[in-house]
Length: 76
Image (cartoon, helix red, strand yellow):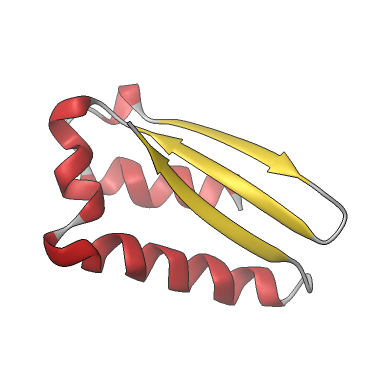
């Protein structure tokens, strides 16, 4: 999951070397924190949050295989 988020974020931003992804796992769920450069935060969120929502949908679909709940948090 972590690598999937990193791949999507690096494709969207201008500074792919500043993308940081951390994963906090629990028994039934996981939280993935995404940090990008301040100049690129708008590109990751998108207009009205559509890009972030799409990323969350992809992650949720991929997590359904492992029967876990995954939450994506975009941290400034």
